[in-house]
Length: 128
Image 1 (cartoon, rainbow, N blue to C red):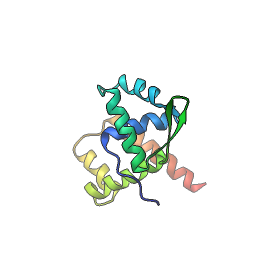
Image 2 (image 1 turned 180 degrees about the horizontal axis):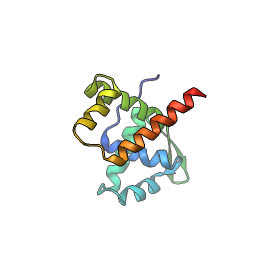
Image 3 (image 1 turned 135 degrees about the horizontal axis):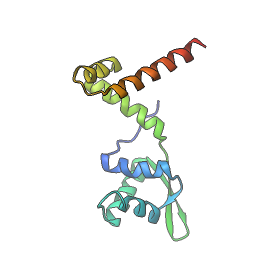
Image 4 (image 1 turned 45 degrees about the vertical axis):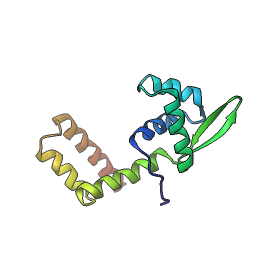
């Protein structure tokens, strides 16, 4: 697996918008983020530039503004970050994480049932 750029929490919010709307332009990114954050347009533009420099985004001129496309797939980023999280906090095992949530009563009955259904479906798929 290729090495992914380090993306901060704030930059991740920008990436989420671009993953959802590939080929989005600067003004559209600013418009969408202004609904969920208090960042100024200049701050958003600075973070876009940082993401380009890190290699997370590609950009091209679209009229008078730039448009952005992700260089990192959302699924790939989530996979790498999930594995990193498990390694840092649960010695790389999902079982330890789930057990921790179960022991601390952090999972509701609905969440436990949903998890059980997911596991059963996966188990049945493997049998086929």
